[in-house]
Image (cartoon, rainbow, N blue to C red; front, side, top):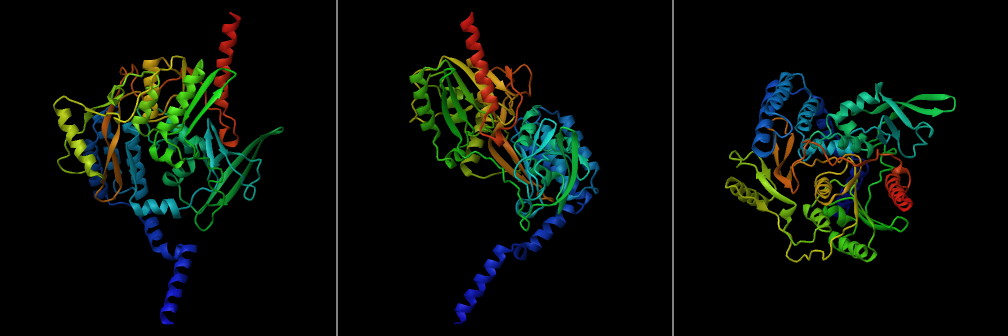
Length: 501
């Protein structure tokens, strides 16, 4: 009986903690909030800044591609000059801005696990889901219990104009080179809320200035809403439209166009959608070979990259020579040995591989990525008209693919400039280092890849569209892909013009 009573008490406590996490987490939450708002001692800021630079120099093999050593030293000196005045969160923002200025989209900073957990589960998020399109901040989703549905634009939050907020937030969104479309894309995808909470504010309520155009002019309304948090789960993410299915193939008979849509090259993204990349690509290309379409559209919009092998397979649709992967990507430059062991690599085989590659690079040789022996290359290359659709979310392997197809296969780039550059990219294996005082974690990519294309005339830029299409928005509120439809109409116009001639 006693054991049964004890068991029931334990179950009751567990249920209480599950339904009311504040009982089990209040002390940790208080600690995280206190730490974020506390001022860091001047000596700790100075030491962490110096260590941050050592980590970058020890691990990043292409650190000064987009920023000179003098510029980086100057930015870090500015941070050190504020030592003794910065709260923990302000220091994190300052280092994040320096990381962004380096121009490596695979470099990142994160808080210690306890604070990341707090931000993810227990912080106070702005309650409205917002997407940024051009100069407009759109409220997306059904908030009829909070605001009148006709008020759909946000002009200010807590008295700060949206353009000022966006300019401030853009300093913390990582990018490749000098490309700015990646930040624009991230804010269009609804990541505004996450960036705002992480870098701008963490409050129990937010005041919005809402606006709508009417027949009689612009109408404004100010509302104060409680934050979204675990105690007040309002409507945050009601309209979050992450696509589970990453791969798709369709055929537009009217224009005789095959459309290959690849939303990710990440193995686990594809696996979650219960798809297999090689099987999908072979099936799709069998249909392409059968139908012999006049046009082929490869849509890598919103594709943030992943496996370079998957990107290589797509490239091989146009060049069937059974070459190893280094025909598209080869490691040309690896970081020098990290004698002080500042950076930790998660997997032992990765570290051995990096050490081996470092020795090869020192001798003027290159480490080559080789395709699996079991894979059979395509027999017949596609020779029709090729279009590649890109936007600010086209990054890493996806951007490299777009650049490769434009340079080597004459692809017509459509959309907005890709978020990733056509330059060599530093990615692949990533190491992590913890700053000694703040415990902020710096994730450093350790490998630089050179794409099999000539170095661009304008460094630091992505795949530039031959047919620019400004993001028209609206895709999240309907099943209509306005940008793809626009391209198909352009193809139809070209066919009609040729027919007339």
